[in-house]
Length: 211
Image (cartoon, rainbow, N blue to C red):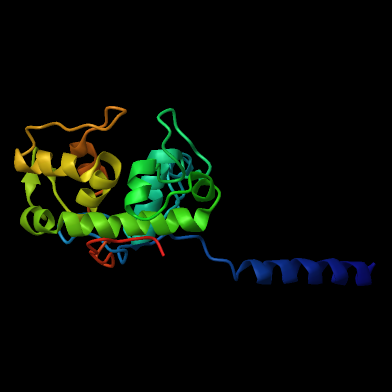
């Protein structure tokens, strides 16, 4: 009887000792993700609120370039490389064939079947558009147009989604020309939704081609 009592007492003491090593979870705010200096933005992870996860639209990647790519991809195709929409736009970032030809891609089948090629095409088009819009980026970056703060990343996203010409018309008219894409989303919305991301690493290239 004494041996059984000692055995169970030892187990209880062991469990109690181990339990003291666990501390209550205390989430901390981290603001070391790249943000605009005028923007109040913090990230809490992991969150204790379940809806913080169910309402997420893109993978958590902050304001880094990876977050920028995934945000645009989700807007365009929900991130699906094989997506072809009702207007014939292709892939994760929804390219039209005429646009692809300007960056050296002519084989739509090879394009839709190659995630690597699609990623290269996205960066290449950003480089090309950055060259074509470099004067506009320099002139309007940080300014408010039609109630929206203009940033380089917002301009480049709007150019990818609505075309360089649409961005120029919007900025040249101080936002009075409400240029829209084929599904009715305005350049103004793109500039707002994709602003303040890290795109400084994109090199402006006049005749950028996919290698």
